[in-house]
Image (cartoon, rainbow, N blue to C red; front, side, top):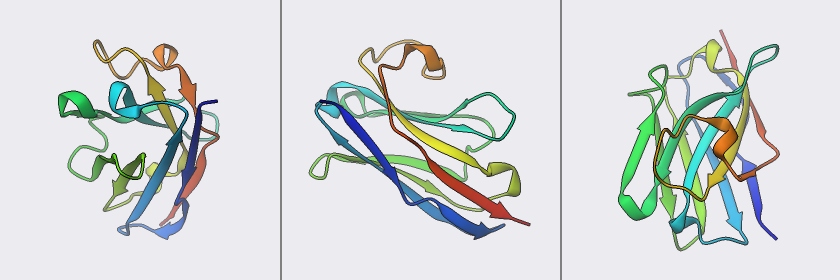
Length: 125
């Protein structure tokens, strides 16, 4: 059974940092594209970042480029999202996702096969 378990969310002031974790079980995530999406209240879920470990490839949404970093630890089967210089507009529920296909646009939500339950990130101004 595939499970993606996010953790690390919380309340932080603007300018602060958080590191989200996604513990992966039931699949060899090195063969998948792993991604973070987020959804703010009343808004659609949007792409944040993706990593294809086997290809050494990462991609980011323009809104987080230079502030967020996605990485993976194969020994711990965990994907991370380091978020620095947080802004109030980063407030959202953050979801981890896994996609078997590693080609194509990483930002298309419907192509992802597995999702976690999400972790809340709140950035106060």
